[in-house]
Amino acid sequence: MSKIRSITSAVVAANFDWTIIRIENEDGGVGWGESFFAPGLSMIIEQLGALMVGEDARHIEAINARLRAAASGAGSVGGIVHNALSGIDGALWDLNSREMGVPLWRMLGGRFHDRVRVYADCHGGTGLMSLGPLLDIRKPSWAHDHALASGAIGRSLFDPGAETDPVDLELLSRRAAEAVAKGFDALKFDLDVPGLVPTRPGSRTMPMGAESLATDMVDAIRDGAGSHVDLAFDLHWRYDYASAVRLADAVSHVPVLWLEDPLPPENVDGLIALARTSVVPIGGGENLIGYRSFEPLIQAGSLSVVTPDLGKVGSASEARRIASAAADRGLSIAPHNIAGPVGTAFAAQVSSTWPNFLALEYHAQDVPFFDELVTGPLIVDGSIEMTDRPGIGVEVDIDAVRRWAKPGEKIFGENPS
Image (cartoon, rainbow, N blue to C red; front, top):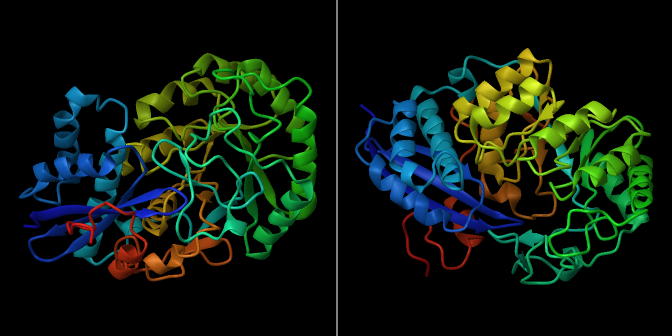
């Protein structure tokens, strides 16, 4: 019997907080997972973990059900508790796969893809912006000034005026070319940048005439990337319906993989209407929890590409239900992923088992220690190879995690020095 002995976590302060979970059983076996960032996440993991000690780690779904029930009073039908649940679920799958001596893709029924295609998130064209749990702009100790995007330190990203870098079309083109030179054949850029974002507090309306800047950005990116590279564009749910229509029109003159999250995820009717009026494929879903949140959007055909984030969607089982439902409707799936190498490796393993998989996000081009945290490199020539290595296919370097740990956070049960 594989009884759980401990559940601990550590937080790496990268471009986001990478919260890595370590589950150890009584036989000394270890499983690794990663949760999407959230305020107070380490404490949630610690308290959920206390309920898991002594449980049989082989019963993943039963453990998940118990934890969801325990958190039901705190709102486990949605909310940040699912970030913790998702990372714990991933660590349980990794632990069980390692105990069986097989890769995770095999535990999930086999793979469709020998290599998982990865697309490079190139932000708004400028360098790294590091964000805290409330999207607060920060300056990480390891980043050089010239590598940072300009922003108001301490402000939340969506505050008007928080981003201060003006759009540089030549830089956009160069950044696209640099990503392609690294081996990526699919890229994503942000279009919610200064000049295009709403300027009044609380507003979702894009300034009149600003869509011409979006057209210029798309043309510059296409010029730098070349005609053979697929492009997607992200709007981070910042806009109202009229603005989303204008932006969709502005990018419709070039082939686009998808236009991501033009509207808030709760605006289901707006997404349905936008999908019916625009020729541009619409993608979305990173902020949705579980299959039931995706179901109305999938059934209505409002998304061409579904983008669940395995660090907060709830569990691998929920993600697989979403992928299967999308496949039944002829939709693609391209997981959102801002994780470090642990979460990325897990998402790749799960993604390899989906016939309708399109591409997996990679958001850490500008983080210099991404490959240091695990036995790597993980991403080679724009893809992740599915091997026969057990579990998620990588080992965590605890010393490297300790070296880049977020100040004040415990490191797998150890108090910070």
